[in-house]
Length: 311
Image 1 (cartoon, rainbow, N blue to C red):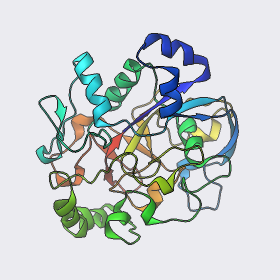
Image 2 (tube, rainbow, N blue to C red):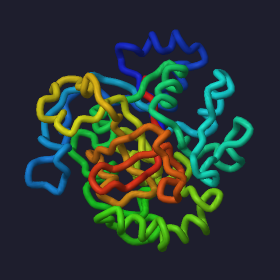
Image 3 (cartoon, one colour):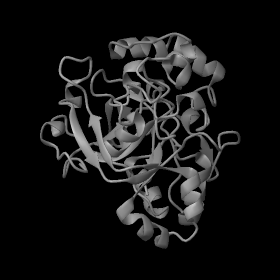
C-alpha cells in the first residue's frame, strides 16, 4: 500500500511539479504532522522485537502525510496517465485488475500487488515520496507513545486483521500456525466466503474511523502493509541519527509498516517493522495471496503490501 508524504522543504517544489495538486486538496487529503520529538522503538525488557530497539527520542521536521492509503482508483489514474504496469499476482484469483482497471467494487480499497518500485514511481508522479520509517511511526503513534494508533489496548474491532475476521484475538507463533489458519483452516474459509474473488479481504480505506491515529490518519494498523522509504537493517536503530533519520544508505530489502488483514495483533503495533522482497519471489500459493510479497522476518508469515505517499 502507499501513503504519500510531503515534507515542508519540498512542499512547493512538489506542487509545482504536479499542477493538478492544489493546496486545498493537500489540506483535505493530507494531515500535518508538526515538528518535534517523539519516542521511537521499543524499550529493553518489553515484548518488542530486537530490531525495534533501543527506544530513543527522535526529532522530525514538520511534514504532511496522506490520511488514507492510496486507493485502486487513485492508482488507476497513475496507470492511465503513464502507461505503468498494472498490479498483478502470481495467484490469478488474487489479481484484482483487468483491462488496466481495478475490478468493480474495489475502487476505494487500498492498492495491493505493487512492488516498492511501483510505489516509488506513483509517489514521484504525484509530486510526493514515500515516508521514512520514523515519519510513518510518529504519524501512527503520536507523541504519547501509543502501542496502537487508537491507544495502548488491543481491540480487534478497530483494525482489519486476522483477529477482526475471526472475531477473537489471533496470535501466530510460527509459520505453521499461520498456515493452519489461512492456508487450510478458519481463515481460508473466511476468505473464500467473504473475500474479493474468494481470496482478498481488504476493506475501504476509510473503514474503522474509531481507530484514527493522533493526527487523523486512518488504517495505520491492518488492512495492508505499507511500503516506506527506508532500506531494512536490523541493527540500524543502534546508531541511527536522532534528527530526521532516513534509514540505511543501502540494503537488500525495503522496510514496511502497519501490518495487514493477514496479521496477528503484534504485527499491528505502531512500532512493528516488517520487510519486503521483490515480487518475482511470489510463489503461486494461497499463502501469498493479495501481495507482491512481504515476509515477516520473525516468523516467516506472508502479508499484503501497499503504500501511502508523503509530500
